[in-house]
Image (cartoon, rainbow over all chains, first blue to last red; front, top):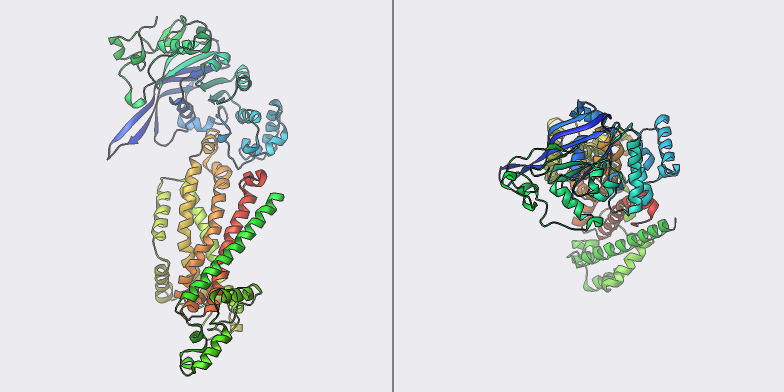
Length: 309
Length: 330
């Protein structure tokens, strides 16, 4: 793994929104702060965090499709160079692709085939799409259907097909399996695993740790807008090999490990505590946790905790 | 195919019901009005010189003394057979008068309808795509100003500018004064239709622009446009592939529904430009107590407006694949 090239490196990413308060006041809402993730070629990295914690914005930030009032900070390096706005526009849809949650992200009034081809009608694009459909065992007639006519099983393969129209080197999958049963989840995940095995970097954004552990190589644990731990999947085999108290709490919450839960809820971005965001729910909380917490290397992974050792 | 037939027959039944209701309402409103059928038909002076017996005879002859329901049924059954009665003012069958007036109006209405539809759609789509920019602000500002401007006032302003000051267009009527009907050219007709059509178009645009803009903004904020952007589609490609496709449906409905507004506007505008169309005939009939003509125009107008809405419904089914293929929503 170490020899493989880094395809995506996100350093201290922050995403904030400008909001207008009553009167003329303006506030900045920091949805993501100090986020760090690295994806290598042929590697599948899962960003795992609870629902509604702003994980999707990470995908939108990388692709440059944040709403107009979104401000992005920090550094994103792609293939060794900074991923500027201009580069994002050039690369998205071709080298950097997004696989969305559901067919709701497809235009309801455009047939599948032309939609995946982005309206292109040249023989080359047609030929390419035919090949992609073949490889996913989709009938060619499906190209003539509208999104509402797809069956649940076809949906996922069609969405993955959209990614294959380019030459993906980085695939971002945003909650690709909401509300699917396990068998289906495995099948969808196998598509992404396949993409990674063919050499692309895959960034899987999900709330489902169990799923992530089945297919991913590494897991970045996302809490209250930041990454608190970066661990190899094998570290999740035992609680002791994990580094951050939140990761350990997630581990204990898995069905096979006792379904235990901890008190409290993830803080809303507006009322984050000072210092460690997990502080109020942490058993090891101490005075020093109120200060700045660095994201440091530890036992081959990374952690944002003073007490971890 | 079967649900298409059901849909069409449902619509046909609806249209008949609507026309029946409109004619009942119109008929009884007129019978409640102070218009005295006898006086309207023979005139004030003639009525004054008649004896009570003569008046009673005429009343019986015309059926004035019959109960309203019977009068309505006899009018409706004649109307159903194509006999709309004789216009008091024009002294010709109502159907003929309406045909002539309608032929005049249809030019105005068609031009205004097409221009306001096309322009409104283009401006609205542009503003929606460029939401928040100065282009959007200018278009939105223009639409809001025009939407709050009364049509008759705008007509007067245009009249002052083009007919009085610049003297490039005629003040009114649909053909030059004092010219033989045979000598009137198409160019003459067009010159006379420009100002009224312009007034109707300008006032019609704003409504369509604002609605199209609103719809376009919704589309631009949708998940599928977000995904299209994530796939590297350019603004033009997004408009071509997704914006146009999705905004044309509501725009079509709006366009056909706007027939009623243009029709309503034409009543005022034709009056100001003395344009001898259906709208002006309606006003004349109302003021001149020409009951058969008034009723005839009312029913025909209702049919035209309903026809517009029906066309929108049918087109929707043809254009929207979810309705066409699914058969749902009908």
